[in-house]
Amino acid sequence: MAEYKASSPSLELIGGMIVSVWAAFPDSFQKLLKGILEKHGVANISPQEWYSLQPTLDALKEIEEKYGHSILSQVGEQAASRAPLPPGIDSFKACISALNVTIKNMHRGGNPGGYDVE
Image (cartoon, rainbow, N blue to C red; front, top):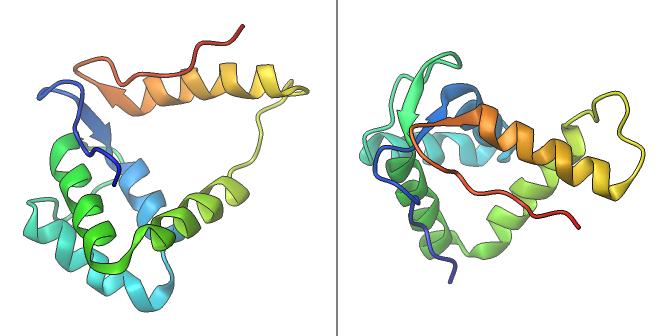
């Protein structure tokens, strides 16, 4: 099982990312997801507000434990397939480099990690 641990207790995630992940779940699963997020203290999500990352990760861990890893894989595929590529992305290296900027823009209060591109 994947580790669901924020690199810093002060690391936060922009609400828009939580909403995007939520929207990638099948409609029939969204009510369950909302209940799990609320159980972990993530409620009334506003796309412009910041939320502690760890409770969101705790909710994802619970989803994996209850429903299996495949649901999270499907959500990742859905989210990736709906995300438009910014202009100028014409190679895998450029895509990964842009991903680092996106990751940093979605987080604050710590180092969210990223990719080293060689």
